[in-house]
Image (tube, rainbow, N blue to C red; front, side):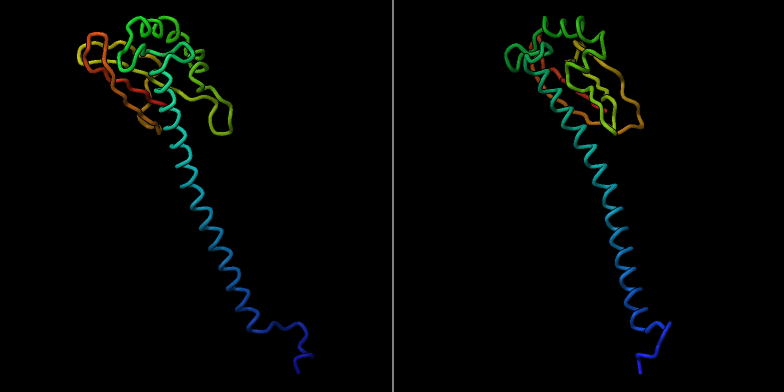
Length: 157
């Protein structure tokens, strides 16, 4: 006479409820744990894409910040213009490079640009990155005005 069991819980219902709640808790913890890993990858991919974009802007004469006249030859006049006209005004150069943005994660992105061969540093522009921060580094190679291999380094954090 199951119809007369008022206020009593059937044992199978208790077991089914426990299994259901454990599956829900497992699914929530699995999703939450994976979210942090995906968010970290998203931020690092975003930094890397910004570093690649900045290096591409430097290697083309786009927005007046390019340092290459004809690839792969670096242009001394263009590098001097970058240093004299742009590097002194960090916020303006951030705008020119498209690194000033408003988002819930960052207010703006810092950068450092260096162009050097084995004996001469042509450009050292931006800020030095702290040691304890995630950053993306892109290195490109071109010919310096003295026809030596020059290393173009872009660091974004």
